Amino acid sequence: MKLLVLSLLTSGAISAAVGGAGLEARAEPASCDCNLHFNGGQMINTRNIPTKPGTTQLNADYYNVDAEGFVHKFPNLCRVTWDRGQHPTVCSTWKQAAGPDGPNCPRSIFVKGKIDCYAS
Image (tube, rainbow, N blue to C red; front, side):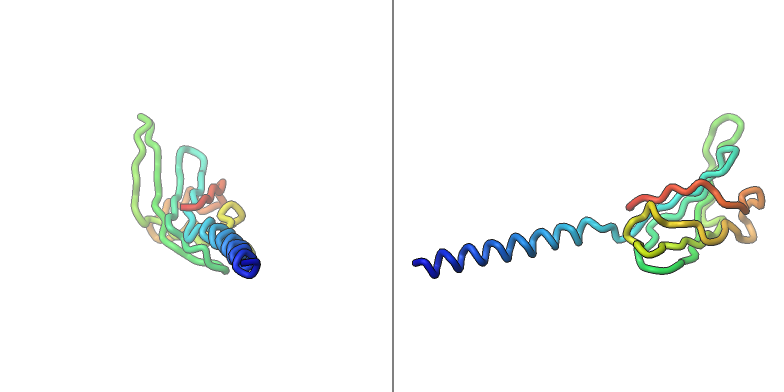
């Protein structure tokens, strides 16, 4: 009987430890979305960027707000290179490594923008 109780307690402790680690692992995002904000209501958006180490260059959507306040979306108009750094699953630590650029991307935003990255 003592062996059964000890066995159940040990089993419960192991399950709790493994379950906790499993929940923590699931809490890390598989991808991030990043926005670059520029003056004049312009913004670049890159979605579903994998949270893997290193840099990655991806197409980005360009958004512009006109004089009447209407938002216009231009899909895949620009490219941005993202540096995911040493902690790629912490989206808020990512940096803009290069871009935005591309043949159709407005030259007025070929600068560093204000970054906003978050789990998608």
